Amino acid sequence: MQALVLDSDGKPRVDAHHADPVPHAGEVLIRPTRMGVCSTDLELCKGYMGFAGVLGHEFVGVVEEYGKGVDKAWLGKRVAGEINCVCGDCDMCKAGLKEHCRDRTVLGIAGRDGCFAERFVLPAANLHAVPDNVDDDRAVFVEPLAAALQVVRQLTIENRPYITVLGDGRLGLLCAQVLARLNATVRCVGKHETKLALCEKWGIKHRLLGDVGLRQDQDIVVDCTGSAGGLSVALQMLRPRGTLVLKTTIAPPEAQSAQGRSSTGLDLSPIVINEINVIGSRCGPFAEAIDVLSREEVDVVSLISRRMKLSDGPAVLEQAGKPGVLKVLFEP
Ligand SMILES: [Zn+2]
Ligand SMILES: [Zn+2]
Image (cartoon, rainbow, N blue to C red):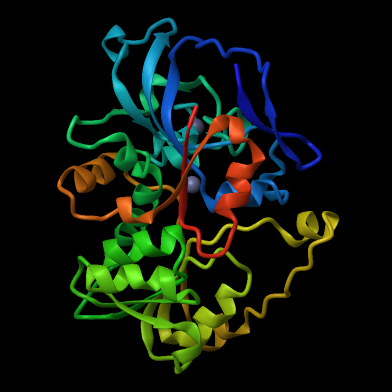
């Protein structure tokens, strides 16, 4: 079968004869019908997580086979799937923090082949059935939307705080929509007028970064820039005792310099001086994301910039990295 593979030298390529995966006990075989490229995929190509294998973790697909012990009712079901594959036995799993399992693999990110292929496997425990009223174009956004909803779960919103979502990319625009549903004054700050125009359509305040005074007056800043520089801008926006939510994951400086990329040093002293609360935020609630999509409370379709094919290979990733491009979706 065809698969989009990241080689250990950091180069993505199409493998036209990738071995067909077989579902082991507790696993299902999924045929993805729509896949999405996310910034994490682009960072993996720069050395993030030191990953090699089939890329991809955003998908909607159909269950085609199942391994031992799996409820056969999953067969033929249209599903989204959580990306952390866990042991169920460690202290984190037992404490109900499965996404922090000490023995986990992560779909297309750590120790497990991803979904950018004609078929891939995932534990049945990770599956969520997708209702008929959420079509494939929407369902493929369940994973990134869940990651945006996680920000709300981790924050305590009191009174009517001033919130800035820093970054007008794929994740920033999802976070802005999700946070705008709260009792808060939310603005999205970015560098691209065309992307911020979507906020205009949704009735969400927005500003170009160059037009914003860095006045240390925001209660909460959510860094969705996907760049090392986002942190220092966020710290200049936050009031003392404010809260910084970090959604940005980037390849570490060593990996980037090994590939000849430069990186910036970080000055963490403002965190101490202004007593900033820092919250790291990663994966979120899938069931809630499916509910939000099914109630059409968030617009994801406007984020689709391009449609491509698996056979387009690395060009799919190149497109997603271009300025002005939001979500690139592709099919097998
Ligand atoms: Zn992602
Ligand atoms: Zn575990």
